Length: 316
Image 1 (tube, rainbow, N blue to C red):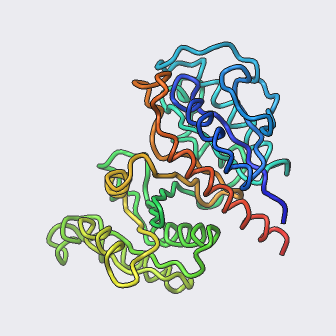
Image 2: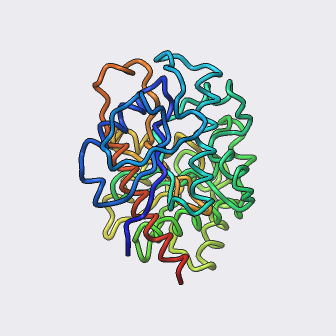
């Protein structure tokens, strides 16, 4: 099979994204993994001649002020995200990978959705279940709720949503090459609720969700106390391939402590593979040449693996 084609966006022009992409593409190993259609400012970075530039609306955009989130770079990013998705939807690319974005700039630029994931779903007219997945080496995480206030989490949980998160992460793991993924599920409350003394969501909501997922054929265990779930995932015999958490920081703190400059975010559940580094735009070091491209490289490599699986599935 020929190499997949990736649409690759350089990310927030005011942050470290262009530098990350430039550093990554200077390593010729990417040429053995995929063809690249690059979305960015033509004169902002130097890339090998093997890279194909996409002549989109921001192709010749003027220079942006570094380290500043504003409506101008927000609109630029939104237009670039649309250009990348449109390449995939038109069959010109097999997956989309992008460098870090700044959410404040995106909102100033006109994005009204909760986050770029919901924007992707709307742009693709996709109404199915989707959510952010985070990847660090061989461990994946999904969350039942995401960018919402902590005091709303309990009211947003349901057995169906727990089961959906288990299904989504299991299917994404399968798409990345894990044949029979095993999933650990976190509880919500301290000590897993301590038999109802500290909350009853574990028995009332989470356990039925785990059972529902098991009935669909997905291998999930739990709920486990959240303060030991990741230890269990990594150290228990056979381990787990993924962990489902109930809210954003329940998983993100653990993953970033284990590998802040390595993690990848996958926009799971959507019709095509979409990946990005799990860290932010790092305005404080933008333009200094010191940004670490490891997470960017990991996001690119994961996108190529998922693109290959996506193509194989499409030809069946």
